[in-house]
Amino acid sequence: MSSKILIAGGYGLVGGTIARHIRKIKEDVEIILAGRNPKKGENLANELGNARVVSLDLNDLQTVKELDVEQVDLIVSAVQDPRDLLIDLAIDNSIAHIGITKLADDISPIALKALHSPPKRPIVLLGHNEAGITTLVTSKASQEFASIDTIEIATVYDDLDPVGPMTAGDLESEELTLRSLIRKEGKWLWVNAQQHTRKMNILGKIVEGMPMGLLDIPSLGAITQANNIRWDFVQGESVGTLAGKNASHEVYIDIEGTLKSGERAKHRTVISDSKGQAHLTALGVLMCIERVLGFDGQPFLQGGLQIPETLLSADQAFKRLQDFGIQIYQQD
Image (cartoon, rainbow, N blue to C red; front, side):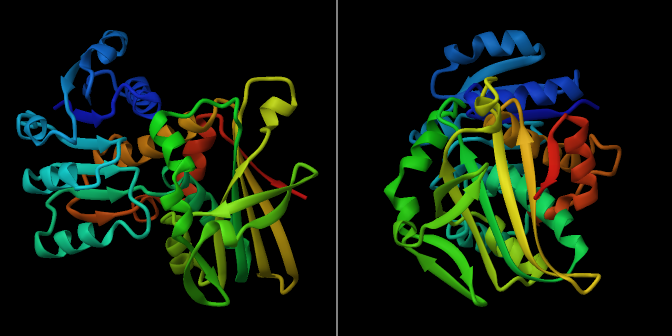
């Protein structure tokens, strides 16, 4: 039986890229592109085939009530949903849900609702860097260490790499910089990002980054027990731009600790996508969709809260990223 997927923000930059990724791997999936201006999505729906557009404005409760979710298997939310309307809709109608916008301090209402009303289909929290790809690759890279002291991650946003209006708004939001999560000397700290910047060497240049409260940080604490963990947003030139090509998107993962051989070491792993940030984020969502709906050949998942690290093994994710041409390598 074919599946039906509703994408909120489905014809935006990230949402549209997710839709195209889905169509590449599954021709028979019906894709519903939901947004405030359905006419803007008609060209994409025609391009995809077996797709249609519907009206959805999360500031207008009536459009949510009128949304036809009969036989929808999965809701993918590529928009801000501050009232958790789509998560509530999914739980109340036994529909799976993947949302990419909830940060570390946003998820307690979802967790408590799930405890009171256990979801019959997976509710996947993807408020991670690149929809979980960074944490999965970091988990893979950490396997060569016996113990880890510090994990420092920097994601470089190139001004020439287009981002959607939601992402642009997030990166410019003062609210996000006032409350950022880091782990320092074993303590979890909520800090003002502008007062806790970090200088680092990226491609031979000293740049400055600011932390944010992404879900990668507490998740990596659970996976690695590292005493110091942070993720920083950096603006700068990408590998692609420096090479005179189209802007690419890079994530730099520095892990310091004791190797299984007993040596002390600091290793840097780089994730690079020549097609940019939106392409990489959409791939993270796609891998979760494949697992939730059984497109990977494994059985459908049952209910409960999930994160990409519980859906996918690090080795499985690493191989899938390589299938899509994502470069992952160690850098001296």
